[in-house]
Figure 1: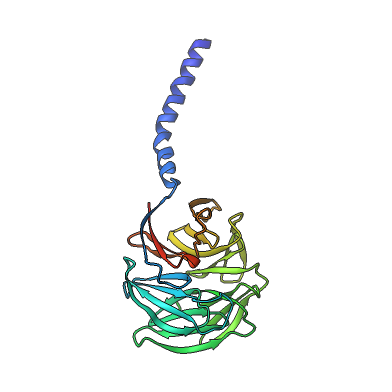
Figure 2: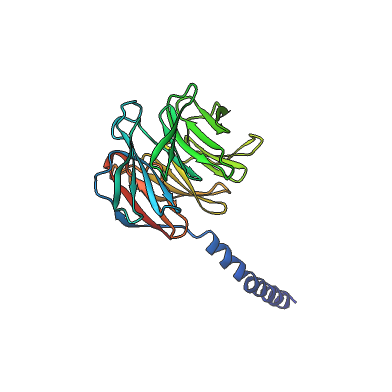
Length: 287
């Protein structure tokens, strides 16, 4: 009787394992570790590149170059235009800026966080359309725009996130711990703040999605629904899920190479990393 029960138990366990194996395999592939493979690096002509924005409409890269100190109004900053293979089209496509950082595109305009101003550039005419002072701003850092053209701008020193809508600026959120990277997706706003990824709903309700990352969190890009790449200025890039899992894909801290505000080509799955003091942009294939 004991042997019969054991055999019956073994039979059912084998059936269960075999039937569940495809599910386990699917789950394994779904959570498989991502990786980055270096493709190319630009020449060291970009002066303190802080942010890269992939532009599918123009099939180019926009690179904000501080060309000075990150917190000074010195008029040395610029936006460079690059081909998607890293070749420079125009290193001073727009010049005369003040420590420009994060960028976003909506319609025909490129929006740039320019220390205390939101600069709006008409891409087709290659000229600054408007320069909008942000009240109380000290260190504007990143910009994102949603599908309706509402623009959000983070200020890492004041802890505020500003909103630009219908030609007016208002404070959207405040008392955030050094907000930096922003990403508008649908009605939600994703915010990087000192090692944390926060999801902000349309009613301004906030939910911490991931914690414990390097405290210099900088850029965020969605690579697929529920999956993100998060860069940290100190030299780390994470793969982060909306379940709060964060895995390191790239670590260049030993080489003292920064990984500032990244860009992403969603079609070719290429990540563009500005290296700040190394004066280059490096491209990686996401696998």
